[in-house]
Length: 74
Image (tube, rainbow, N blue to C red):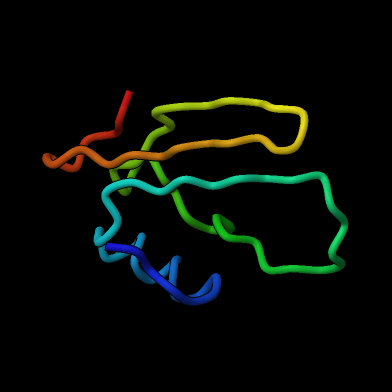
């Protein structure tokens, strides 16, 4: 399942434990001011950890995963 929405929607889904895995791609493009996705969230306490990371010339990709038992991913 994919989640559509903005930062508030994703933050609510993270806090509710509804996201099993999320793939974020960061590109070096200045778009102005934005909202901080993880501000005030303790991802390890919510059971999330980084499971993959890849830097490419066009973007940096980070994958966060959640364990079924709620413990942080490796």
